[in-house]
Length: 166
Image (cartoon, rainbow, N blue to C red; front, side, top):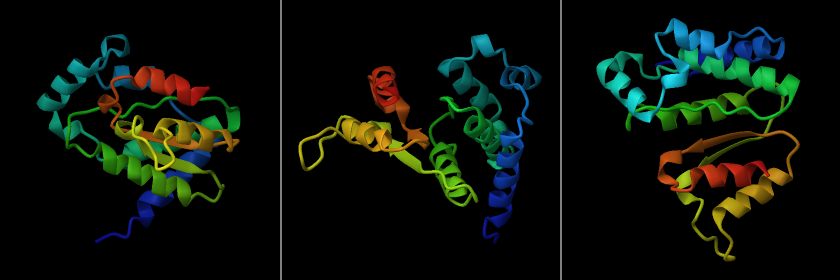
């Protein structure tokens, strides 16, 4: 069994490519894969993965893509949204956890937070909502990789994302 170091090493190299701006255009990649970016929605994605289960996240190429995009973002600044979508049970949470571990192992120190959108409306012991606690945490950081799992479980996800971005 592998210790995962190859995956982490590939992530690091892809991150470095991203820092240098060596990435492909996402829309072009989607088109090469047979996707029409303007027509992709949740139902289309669900149907696609039902018909093509082997196309679900296997993490290797996807990790490299995420690493390149993160590398670009760290050099250019700003906010980037990289959605990870698919049917329940295909490994999205594991994929996000792998990204978290890989970012933590980069030579460049970069804080990373993995949060569950399902918990945004839960109260903490001091009576604050988890979403507000996250906002306060993020305000203390100049740079952060924020990974949000289970966005489909937050009925107000668009408002939550806007609040996080403030």
